[in-house]
Length: 104
Image (cartoon, rainbow, N blue to C red):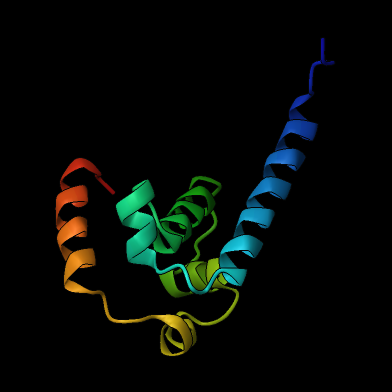
């Protein structure tokens, strides 16, 4: 049986996993946010909102664009210009259907 993990170590492991998720999403610029939303019910913008919410819960004010830059690894407008593609009609239809089931 595995040894119990103390709270500090758990926090460090969770932080490391979150950083790895961000790294992975930064590498996978081919994966569009709408695809993430359609398949998983969250996207990079959701992660940045959650990051902003976590900061606020700690009494730290981070604006939306700063939170997005943390997640995207660059200013959001730069990421959009470099990597964001127009959503296809199929993606838009799937988003309309999936967004009914997911509350942000």
